[in-house]
Image 1 (cartoon, rainbow, N blue to C red):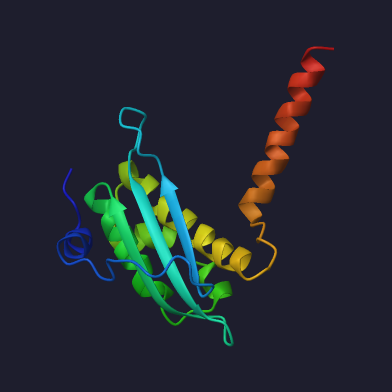
Image 2: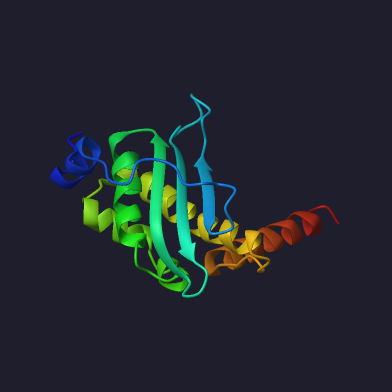
Length: 159
């Protein structure tokens, strides 16, 4: 499989690699992925955002990713996209936006999903540190509803 020019550019010249102070109330940190080798994808992504408390605008974003070129490229890309966005705007970033921007093949779709999950987790970590309720995102609500339906079906199958 050949990587797209965009993936190669971000992989060879990643932007915003590094760390922010994870103990700062202004910083939201996400750690997503699975380091277990042999269990599918083993990409691990740490994404951090620094938020201006007064404006709720992301002033900085950093990442460290262990994984394939597509995972590193997706991480680097989203740190660039996040800077200057409000938390609400950040949550609008969809994995398919990442797929299109990097021209990812279907076999690398998981890298874009991981980046989207990292954004949401970083926003929720920031919210948690600042005494705000975590956001329940639409697909999480759908997932919870699906899991409840599955649970009800399995219970009724035994009665």
